[in-house]
Length: 264
Ligand SMILES: [Zn+2]
Ligand SMILES: [Zn+2]
Image (cartoon, rainbow, N blue to C red):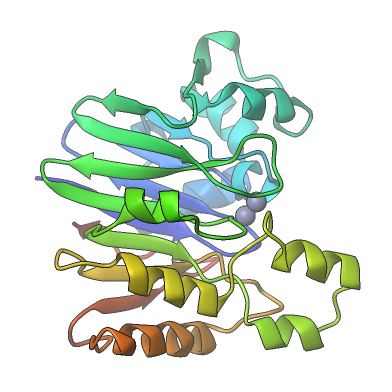
């Protein structure tokens, strides 16, 4: 049946991503309440008991809010790198030791034939990392929460079939908005988040003949709008002669609703 995926929720308020093959069902992050996570899985016809493991990107609350409750209730194994584990406990509570696993940054782990590569990103957390998922000859990149897209990362994520890519803010909206200056500086900085323009620019540099779909993710509730993110990124695609909707799928994600379970 191949690889299927759904972005259960994405945005500055909470993130979770679902992956499924015949043999394996995984979550990347569990950033909504336990109750909401169950509801999101229900939206794609899945139950929390179905989840074989949860992979954590970093310890910010919009990525781990429901992790403790979910893992304890459904006895789900959890993978994170060592520094992230150390940074997590207060907010996550006691996940039993036998459910805790280490997934170091910049390594590849195989989950019953589903190969997942972790790579470090520049973001203000203990040891943040994101993932490239490979199944057969397909490649899916999940990348949000980073201050800038380095040349090294561009090399890793080049020519993916599907991108789930941060488009956090519209720089003008952020600058004009009500956030205090130190918060604005954090978001704009090298360890913050990438803007619609930075996202478009990076996508323009990495997409290839295989690339079919882009999902714009981790939009700020206060400093972005779906239409604006889509418009900005499609302008960069046009620079490569690609029209969104015709040559390449450009999709929204939502903080409350799961995207349809889709085959890669
Ligand atoms: Zn985040
Ligand atoms: Zn973060």
